[in-house]
Image (cartoon, rainbow, N blue to C red; front, side):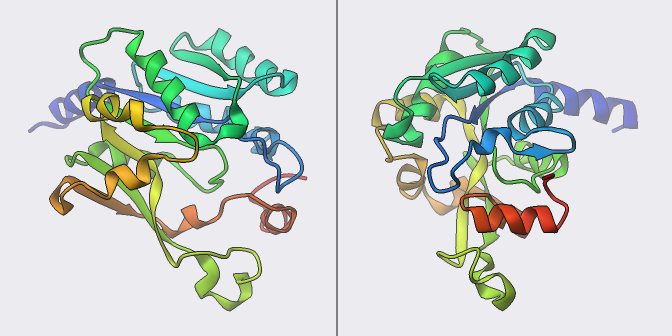
Length: 234
């Protein structure tokens, strides 16, 4: 295959997906909206949406919390520049991530785009996520292609910042659109995709390793650490 043909093929592949950005968390442990933390001179919600834009998707649905003027203002400004970016307000953000995902799916279904075959699902606080990793997820052929990373609890110098299971399979991930629509009624409260994905045969699940995704921001201590590393700005 020629370089030009490969490029054109890749572009067609990228166009056959939509993106849902789950950005309606209330950041209660952090004490301030993580959506508005600053990376590369702009709020995280904008930084992550720009990453999604690089995939040339048919639609990018950003789910935000209700009654938060600064978050709404930031993403609305970007949506005015990029018609593919659509905003969905979650009036029940306190009920958990699953409801946000369900709202995002509903918005994509409203497009009635027959050519969408995959959905890329992202959060906003994995601050070292990059375009290379997203491209690898979308290039996978399995029903679900998820991110795989280790919790930094294994490393002594981080153990007070990043606690939990040592192996994580989760967001961001790419998933078959038809399957996601089938699962939508089961997405309630905090019952997200993880339990549903577990019932799939192993051969239907692909993984892309990236330990940098271990660094998310949930607490003031993690935020301070990220700022010291230069990953976020004060």
